[in-house]
Amino acid sequence: MIHIKSFVCNPYQENTYLLYDDNGTTAIIDPGMYGPGEEEAVRTFIETQGLEPTLLLNTHCHVDHVLGNRYIYEQYGLLPQFHEGELPLLMEVQNYAPQMGIRYDPSPIGETFLPDSGSIHFGPNELTLISAPGHSPAHLCFYHRTQGFLIGGDVLFRNSIGRTDLPGGNHQLLLTSITQKLYTLPDETVVYPGHGPETTIGYEKQTNPFIRA
Image (cartoon, rainbow, N blue to C red):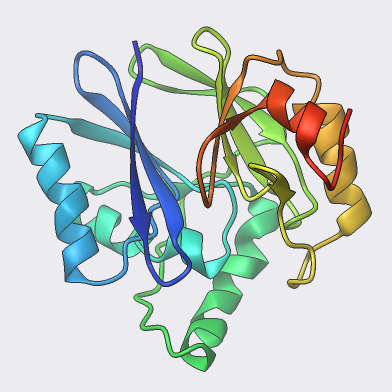
């Protein structure tokens, strides 16, 4: 069974996720830790729970989702994995962060990139890749079919959707991604978004003011 632990990080109140199984095998998704306090909180949890991080994933590469990539690499030797289409965004963070007054230790670049579809594993656990561009050019979501949850990044929020006024954003493409890629998942699927509280696919299909099924 996969357990999910979230940490609210950085000035953007981004959700950093640890996914770990009963053996402690762990995937870290969108590490947004900013500063020693947030870094220490994640490291302490990993140590006290006896976890073994083996995979680092980014749903996309906006600044708030990659601030902790360097720290995770230095602590655990993990290179981030994301879609190659996000690489220009990651490179731009080095210029964007100082303009916003944010200290940024540049993220390492992974040796491999994730595809549009397929799956990725940590230990015996499988996450299905779902391509959902619109908020960013090559945004990926990570779906666990057996337990029925989605790590959704900044595509779909509780009663909201991701911004599309940032570089690489496309509003109509985001709506298409939601209707064709996310709203086709079972209604009971729990969505763990990049910001704010969790929700479900069924709830958003019925109540989301931006896009309903």
